Image (cartoon, rainbow, N blue to C red; front, side, top):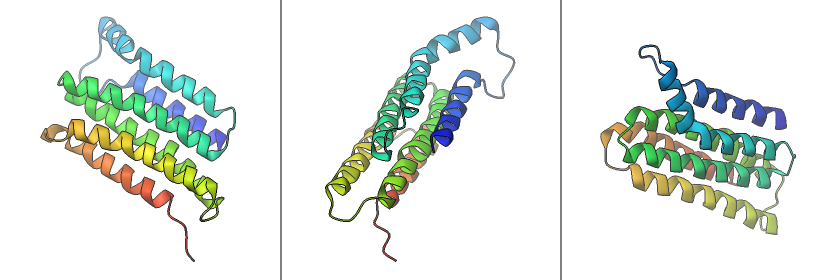
Length: 171
């Protein structure tokens, strides 16, 4: 599990650093500007990845990933307020990866080990609700402009996955 999370975060980081689109070649000055724009997000992503390697339980990993998703949502809001549609879409796709491969996977793992009605189940539901709050807040800020619709659809998909991840499997 730790390896999967590390790979997911490396993928996100590589996409963040190397994302340059299908447009013309980027000049060194443009690369420097993109690096500067992404610096804080890269630091937070790296630190979160390092925190995950400490091998806490799935609820703690879900919390770390929820905090990371919150930071990514802030970057998406900045891009949206600056009318940088391409960046909103790019970060939105990566945000969805953080939610799906970080929060959802860990909540699913926690759910499989938690009994109904237990104190741990309450913590599981609180973790899910905290993650949904991050998604809902971002959705509220992106609602309206058609160019952000793909990101909003990703948010809806993430919310559905979060709800499904915490449902008790009744066989």
